[in-house]
Image (cartoon, rainbow, N blue to C red; front, top):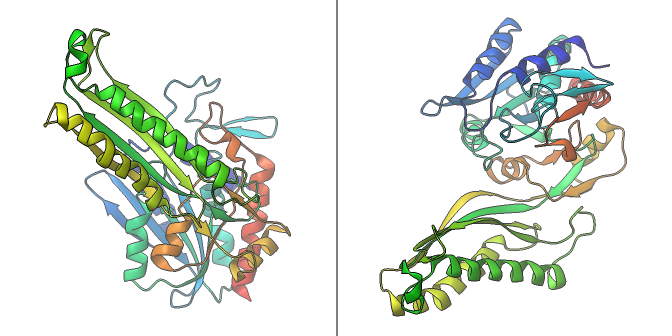
Length: 386
């Protein structure tokens, strides 16, 4: 059974609707009030325009290199999902704790906050940093200014644990991601004159077909790593919108698509394959009929992959803290690669709950997973005492 303080914090955190489109300052302010009460040093990194903030709290000697425990505070929307309980309230049933974010990833955040009194009581020779970010769910945005702040202010760390849901298995690798928006500007008009016009939806469909073909080629011929749950680089077309009526040639189409690449693949080169095809083959055809037509590409979100060595010190430590001998790699992305890329902090992913519950209606985390995470944090505390 998780501690009373962990459960209290989970209830409080879930009670804040921190869907990424909303401010997270009420949650951050509640955490800061607790940190002041506990006499824990913290620093806020605020985006005042959005009403959002990240923070980093430090327990132990700040001048030494320690361990970072990292979590995000935002959650995905519940719109259109069929919940059987109020999503922003924790509902305990049969050893499970239901609510938006219980798994992804306020469960980990609650454990970290609930364990602060234990950290305070320990004679830490190395610090434990608790880093809370925002807007992870829409592209790992809020952790970037937090990492810039940490680097600029001389924070040191031997390693970082990103507490995304892994069932407390140590994850040493995940894919990089590029989320793209393609906007096709054609020339519209009456469908009887279609050969003289530029159908934006048809052009977007050609690009979508090329994206699908690239994914199929990568599955056949690209790099593979069987330790990943999806062992190859993948492409995906998520939305394609355009047109108003059957007898009108659409002048605008908007498509959103993504590439999730193994760390050894050049994800920028893969995206360039699609943009080059569009620029060199499709746009000349479009402009031959209508000079004003064009194709635009926007990067919606991007984050690097993670490729921590299985024998790296942080991997060895995390396996020991988790009481496990195994490790894994996963297809979904996290903030872990940014800790490595921006702050040069060796990082693994390990947290309570299953990724299969993330983003679902009736999202839940097992109480036993929170207890296992508490045991993990106790081992981190013990390590930092040694």
